[in-house]
Image (cartoon, rainbow, N blue to C red; front, side, top):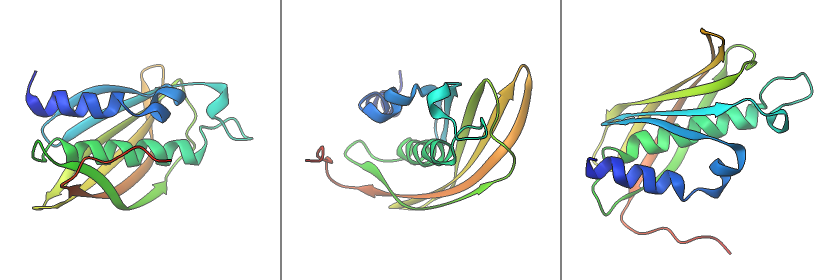
Length: 144
């Protein structure tokens, strides 16, 4: 496994919140990440759609880890800005977030994230986000 892939999988697997909601890292390439989230009643809002906060969480994480694939070994990603457009209702068997780095700056990476809801074999484009991450030169400590 390429070193950047190992680092991305380690980082993703250390996120207890992503495990809590059931998210899975399903693809890692240079400048590209895919995260999938299976349907779960606990992740819905009152109309039976995936909650917008869940959709935004996927966008934030996918963008951050896409940027991480292009960072040096001693760098960690930290989101500094993101904007999301909710395009269609997020109803389906699972959500799929695909993030691609569109600007690979020295410290700041800008990523485009497309989130689709999967129903059978049909994908509905339900969100588009732009996520900016900065490469930090330190190991981030857990809160408390």
